[in-house]
Amino acid sequence: MRTNHITLLKTLCLMGVLFMHAAFPFTAPGRFWRLYAEQQSLVAESLIFWAGLVIIPSFMFASGYLAALSGLRHSRSVTGQIGNRAKRLLVPWFCLMVFWMVPLYTFFDLPAYNRPEGFTLSQTYMAALSGQFADHLWFLLVLFWVSSFWAVIQPTAKRFGPLAAPALALAASLLIYRYGQGLTWCCFYETDGPLLWFAAGCLFFNCRQRAERAMALRPRLWFAANIALFAALSLYGPQTPVFRWATSTLGALAAFQICAHLARRHEKLRQLRPYRYFEDNAFRFYLFHMPGGLLTFKMLDWGGLASPLPFIGLSFLANFCLTAGIVEVVNKLEKGLFRASGPPRAGQTALT
Image (tube, rainbow, N blue to C red):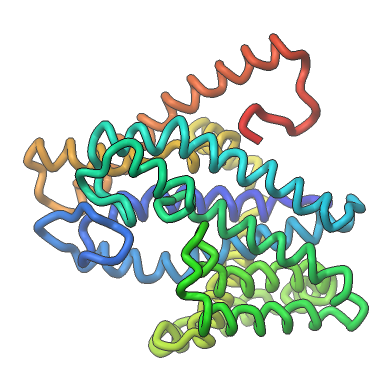
């Protein structure tokens, strides 16, 4: 079963994350970011607003789609599924926090959410290992909670039809939104929207034949209607949780439709060396691109570059090159580890 469109969707979302992090310093000071430029940019604000409605929901949608596909291909127990997700998500989170994020954020004294300036190494470790200071790796924690929830409810819910699991996900999302804001341990409170976007991806996969056949009949009409409804809801949706979740689900579906259309050109895209390199190493780029974004921002700010748009572009390119260098080092280290321990199994990496 071909998944070029999902691969393309995940790759473009990850590249969008890098670009968002380059633009964040030029937006109004918010909750998670702690380094901001003196001059704000309306372009950056608009970019962050629309990307926030699409990128993370799209990645969760893709993750749900792939989870349903994996369930079709492999039969695992609930504990087996949760153990597999812990290995693939929590092990990288722990290793990155212990050996990468905490030392660098402490050495450069970078401010972040739940990691103020002046925190010592031990204080930063305590904040990180309790899941309070997670920075961009919050996504790994949230994806673990979401996929574990799905593994638990799916065996029972599928007996009651394809809509039972999404209905349970909606109920859980409402409960977490209403009562879970105090559950900050390991970003549990962030799972309200991701539960629904993940469920939407699973539902779409389970109904893919009918959905893709319907979209294939009038693809432009479906896409135009989806975009129109997405734009209309975005004017009101972000103000309330249910409308915000619905708006982001439509944004994820629109991104899915675009990537499904571009999937036929996927091989041509892979002929572009920068794109192919990023796609083949996208997960590592995500893991290691921070705190490079903050460091490049500080470097360019120290250099006196004040114009937001050139600053954002240069910050993105500088961090891309910096992260590519780190990825190359990691790849070589992995090859050395595998040579010492024997050949890896298919799909295995030292981090996962």
